[in-house]
Image (cartoon, rainbow, N blue to C red; front, side, top):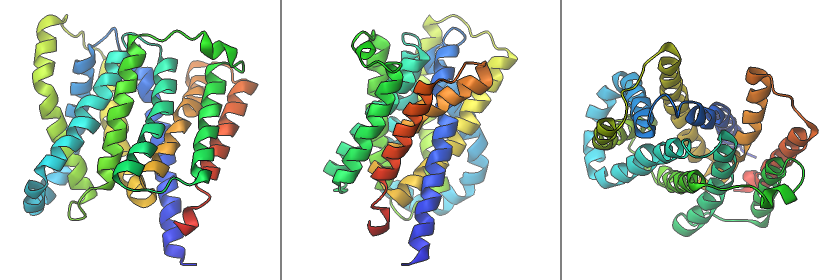
Length: 303
């Protein structure tokens, strides 16, 4: 067995797990900041911050790779539109209507399913019975957490217009995952992220101006400032570089499955940061999701 492919797989898994760990705070921020800044404004400042951070590092390489970028301008446009302009904006709009729990649970359970289906249709990625079983176990674990250990509670859950928005965001992110897998090999990871961040921010700008015209002025404070830095540096620059690399190493469908870890990490963060109590339900849900991920990745060696 060649150790190099195996090492690449382990690196891909580590990057996917790290990304979901950082991303787990995004849904909490979306809900907690909804009274401080309007949704498009939050998205715009996030991506503007991310662009300012990464542009100095990627600008020279953009000049070098200019020809291949121009040859693939339509591809880059749709990657920026789905992954940057639309995905998180939908989540932040949803944050005005739905709880952080609903945002995390609905978004993370639906997006992997969509990504697996789209990867099968457009990338012809194999969907083995082990991967299906793993995905079902992940969903079962999240539903168990949603119902607080009683699946009858799930039927009684209230779904709002915000839940529809987060489903729409999950769909756009699933499309983005497929597009990342089809990234032209001549475009380096740093240049790809720099270009889509910049383009996605530009696409957001007209809608940001319209929203500013009809919204109350933003009352900036240090909490909001550090929230934008966290979203721009952590949730955007670091996470997108890691996630895209994980997709390159593991494939779209397999990487998307790791998104099911987000509610688990969010629960742990609630214990550490907010002092909430961890229960047997949280532990069992985490175990189910982790077992599901292991089963879904059992065929990695032969892929």
